Length: 491
Image 1 (tube, rainbow, N blue to C red):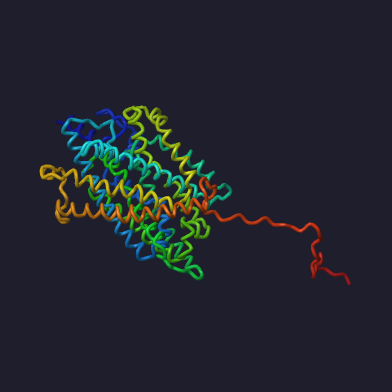
Image 2: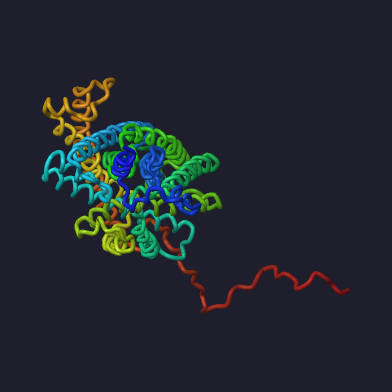
């Protein structure tokens, strides 16, 4: 009985590393490594969700508030926070449904990481798999691009001796080291540190804005244009659409059944960071944010700001790994390397994934506007529309609902309530997020291309000071009151 329990436990963990031999004595080094490296608890999942959800968007939300206005900015955060938590719950129930069915067929997942497109394939067929795979991979690709752009944008406020494009080259090489992190099971210490870093940054933005006070003649005129309004709204849609990696995070848990409410609790914590910081920065700087998509650009240079920039850089490295790791898995499966136990061979096989990310970050360095474009065109389908439709079609028959592993909560109306909410999510996100949001964000994105051009060296950098010109044709006029060489006078 004991051995069978151990087998079940290893299947549930689904970690992407070799299992330790039973009964082997553990040294201090192995215990420390397990404490820092081996994370599969509900707390680890919460840290991963919260840390992944609030990354560089923390710096662009004040920009969104300037487009939306204070009231709409707050309401959209609350609304999309709840909507994101609901669709994350749907993804988790579909994962449990798929995994339970496969384990009944004696499928072993010890050396295989389940992904969202495989859940769609197992529950709804290959057409759903293909659509889910296309949207998910494209979203995660551009999510990684955004983190790389954010790194270059942030470091520029500490060291402007290099332009942002050069910084993108440098941080692209740094972020490529994420190929050595096997799976989400190994992000324990990184997730914890990442959340500490964003917490510091959020409260730095809040406190620094209040201490700075409102700039002279500050105006809060938003919303002024529909294009800007829906662009800001889709950036918030993107902010709370970080659950494209939900399946991979769940698969790294020892007991994935406990995930159901974890994303909601993570969202509630994230709101304690995003609402005060975005509101405070918008209160202090108002419409100036319309031309400054990175909140760091308006706050005065100080050791506290430099610390926030450095912490965000480290956190963006972590979030790059979060977004890129599922892409590594897809690539490994495509080339037949996913079940290889050699970490170095898998790392080498993963490197080609980083190259297009690097290239796209150099082509489109539009920090801020690219978030809204990705939010409207990709996040809307990847983590809102497709999960809601998948839940509807998976449980469309009475037999499927009766045999469901996880039934919807009664306080939301059971199956009828969940169906109603899912239809609302599909219609709202398609019309407002994809429709109006897509129109607005693409219009704004094209405007950035027309203004700055592709491959721009330094997006939204202050113009260089004009060189000082000296007139060499005439001698400078003498001083009217030349100072004496010394102050002692001889009689």
